[in-house]
Picture (cartoon, rainbow, N blue to C red):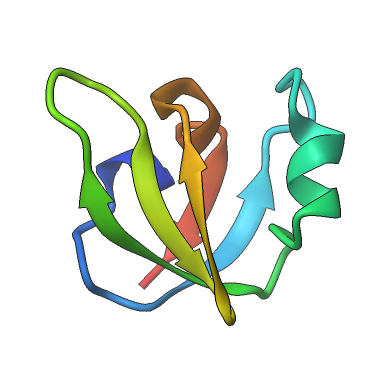
Length: 73
């Protein structure tokens, strides 16, 4: 499932990042790599950004960027 579809407050593992995404390399620089633990902390209304926790820090990801990240529960 994509990170965009993932439930809140549940720790998941990143299984894949869509290499066709324009932010592919930026996500990898931020530590969003295969095997990383990630969780959705909150969501902005109306399809806005997701607040995610990756290791010891928090990120805001646009919905289209979160859709490019595949996770496994």
